[in-house]
Length: 282
Image 1 (cartoon, helix red, strand yellow):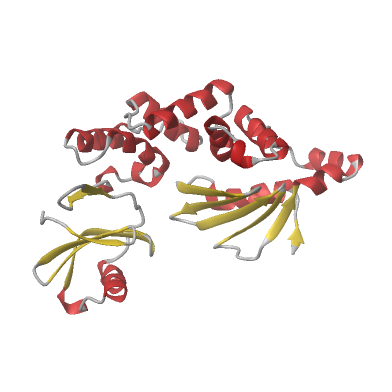
Image 2 (cartoon, rainbow, N blue to C red):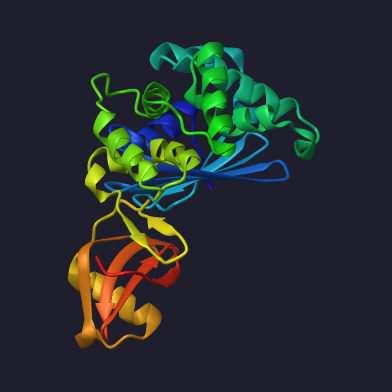
C-alpha cells in the first residue's frame, strides 16, 4: 500500500471536501477512529486513524493510501525541512492540537469525559479555545433538548463552512424555528441541521410528515429522479411499480438514509432512514 506525505493526504482530502457541503460521521473502536465525509458532488472520503497511521481513500480514488504520522516524526530532520520548505504546512488550530494531544496520550479511551470525547470527535473544527468551548456548549444544549439561538446556529455552521464568509443561515433557521413552533421538530434537534449543511442550499427541503404519534422531518439532501425513487421503493419494499406515485421531491443517499414520500393503493407512505411509515396525506 502506497505511503504518502502529509501534504498529499491533505490534498486528497481537499479534493473531495473543499468548497462543498459534507456530512461527517465518526466512530471510535478502541484506539481506532473511523471517519467518513459524505458529499453530494464528490462522493465520500474515508479515513481510518490507528495510532497515527491514517489509511484513506475516496469514492473518486478507491485505492487505499497511508499517511503515517509516526514515520513523519522519525524521518531525518533535513528531509523534513526540505519538504516544509517546498510545501508550506497548514498551522493547526487550538482544537486540533488538543485533539492530537488526547489521541496520542490517552491510554484508556473509555475513561474520557464528555468534553474530551467532543474534542476527539470535533476538535479540529475550532481554531481557538473560545470557539472550542462555545462549540461544546452548543452541543451540550442540543443533547439536553435545548434549542440553540440563531447566533449559535450560525456559529456552528460557520465552524464547518469556513470558506464562505458571507453565508446567510437565516432562511434555514427560520424554517427550523417554524417546525419547532408547530411541534414537528424537537428543540434540541435544530442543532443537527447545522451538521447537515446540505440544507443551506435548499431550506425548503426540510419538510415534515405526520406519522400519527410523531412528526418525521427530512435530514437527507441528495435529490434523485422520480423514476429512480420508484425503482428503489419497489426493490426495497416489494410494491408494484405501476401503482407507486412519488409525492414531492425524493431524497436518497443510501439504503439507510433517505426521505421518499409516495402513494400506493390509496395508502400514503414515507420511507425514511431505512424505515417505512404510513403517514397522513398532505
